[in-house]
Length: 147
Image (cartoon, rainbow, N blue to C red):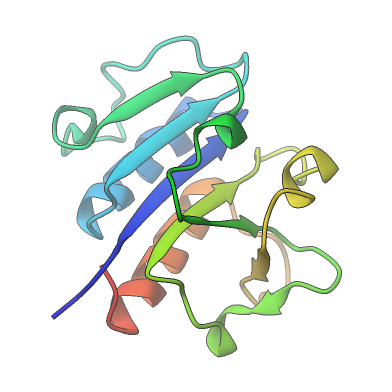
């Protein structure tokens, strides 16, 4: 039986296409909450790539700063190609996870990473886009027995 929950936090995403695909991934893999922070995304609604209309089935919050909304006793995790980040295959996901994904045209800065207990990365030759990263992280969590 799977345990826990996962929060997907998108920090200042650039592309509405990737946001829609990230929302779809969150629904496919059972995320409990989606936070979208920063000035770029002012509203959520009809996004062609969110074919499952995840915003109708998972709470979505538009916030100024995703890090101000970490649930109690939940582990903040920076997902990025960062120096010293743990490789996803060897990572043990916490039962209550708050995954923070950065914008497609930037990396997570110290404003985010200094507040994250864990830093993880998907070992790739190049960087993946936002939606691909959300899919891979949530799939790995599910495959390792957590919801």
